Length: 96
Image 1 (tube, rainbow, N blue to C red):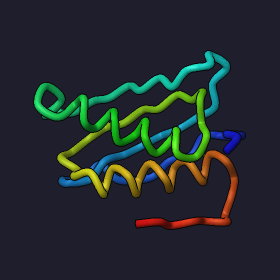
Image 2: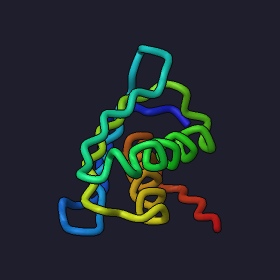
Image 3: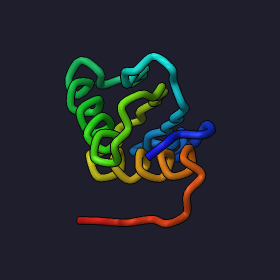
């Protein structure tokens, strides 16, 4: 999936995560994570975001994530929504 603009999903409410994804020329996925539980769950949050991007063939992107206690399936859903918006696509394929 090719990223053509910046896409955003989520809120700053408790138990949610705000994800902003944009194109990058760096050739890597860069994740800037802000979370009050980063020490406990930061690695898992990053893994969920990266797994979603890789599943859709994204190899280069900038991601800003502000976590307010979201669980994995919320992180996945917000990442996919922001990704489709960044790719300017509406042909959603929801799995699992």
